[in-house]
Length: 201
Ligand code: ADP
Ligand code: MG
Image (cartoon, rainbow, N blue to C red; front, side, top):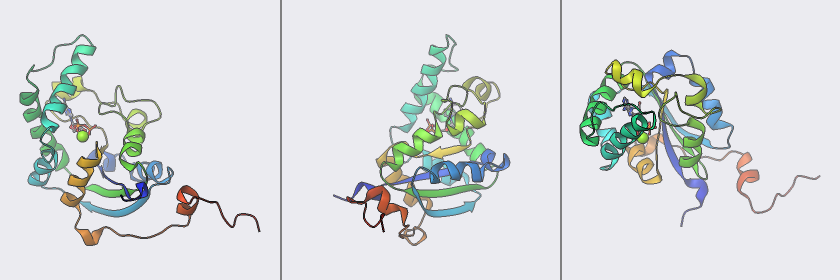
């Protein structure tokens, strides 16, 4: 089995993240966990790339629809539809518009538990209810309610892979093998080596 330090995850700074001048702030938060940046590029995605990206996981539609319905029910509000798949189709159309509206920055971060750690630092899907201290919770304010009433995607600054299998499908969708660089940084010894050698002279 590969060492846990080789786990990789995909992060995309969405168009609103770039417009808000939060690129450095966002990268700093992932970088300071000890994770390592192994791929990076700026591009304007096409609608096809976005549709394919969100449909890589066959369960995503059901999950995204159910999550939206649950959020309405929790607040005692009525969802725009009670059919998760119908809601998901609507969300995909909104995402195509949102994610192709300007440049995005795609990155691959590598390190132990990278998928879980990046999600923790990123925060929940809806900024309104995302935890304090997370990027989505601290830097933006959007909600299901505002997104629905304007028929648009929730603006939450970042995409981050939700699970390891999702990351494994998403990374090759955005990066060719040669664009991902294997290299070492000195602090990996402190994070991962069994013994902390050569500290005392
Ligand atoms: P996450 O990005 O937290 O993994 P999902 O994979 O469930 O969230 O959804 C993908 C993206 O679709 C979200 O980040 C958000 O921008 C948008 N989105 C999700 N649900 C809705 C919704 N009900 N209405 C509008 N946009 C949504
Ligand atoms: Mg997701």
